Image (cartoon, helix red, strand yellow):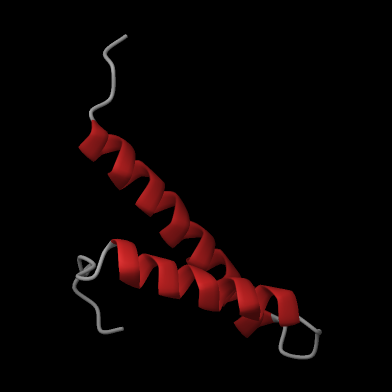
Length: 64
């Protein structure tokens, strides 16, 4: 099995962080009546981290 390059490891980890942020965003929107304080805090931290680690995220063609 070929070893992953540092770039591919970084891209994979950033992808995992983005997917987690998307999951939390959906969960918050779908459950407005629940107390999701920890989810909101985690989402904020993930957004900050992604902004620091990947300052120019690639758009999928849609407006964000």
